[in-house]
Image 1 (tube, rainbow, N blue to C red):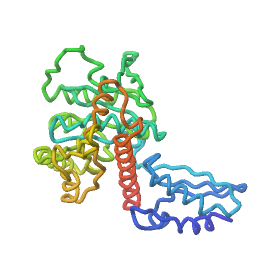
Image 2: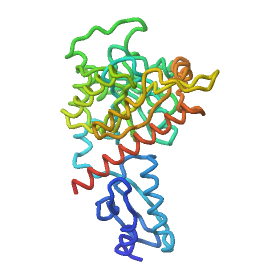
Image 3: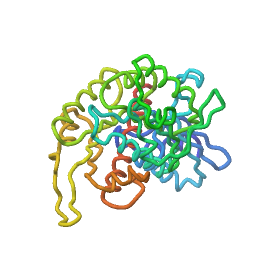
Image 4: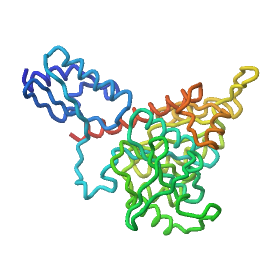
Length: 345
């Protein structure tokens, strides 16, 4: 078989999200056949997402009876040189945001990062909540960053590289900064931290639509954002403001996550919708956005946050809900990246 024969086989492999075959969509970067080996480069941009893993498996199946060894690689073509990129080693930057505080945004960010790492991805977690950083406590990060005076080497927990303002201030010191100082520190942390090669960098943003969000939107190449809300109307109203903020900056919203979506009583087994029901899903439908899933109100989430063990790494109903959210976020990041390749070819 030659290159043309291989491409003909690949034309039978479909992208379930974009609705076409991977050849006509422009998702085959290159094909080379040499010495009994077919080397295929695919434009897949969300490592370890279930959908992209399935596409890769379909490619192998399409070539299984050719007698060729199949070697696959994945990369998204980039028009910028490495020197021009803000984070040249990071494939996907995902912001986790909320319109208001107290909805469990940091909990979602921590479990998203840990869940992606558990899938096998290389992950970083940037706690960008300048005024109220708490991610280090939530993962019991006792190790501090190291520095040579020019760059900062972040510590790791659960396979996730961590950076937080909490590492740079005293334990009880308040952060009292104006907008320009926030912009400066966020920019420095992005540029000076040795993130290395990452599949995903999860950004835990502060609540609201202030200076930190604006700095990140103007500075970083975001793949997309996850909006966290709870079911009640007051949280939904503020979540809409977050949606509009990302919309004004042409940033993709990967979907809506609903936290505290009901409580299962451990004594009676009954399910109680304490904060109402269906708010997050309704918000997603209203704005034609994906619903990433609902996370129940579970004491294990609190104890995990206090003890430093993300719930997504455990077993049970709540862990399974987080795992669904993780897979949905990765899948939707892949849709954004593949659509960009297909539409820009």
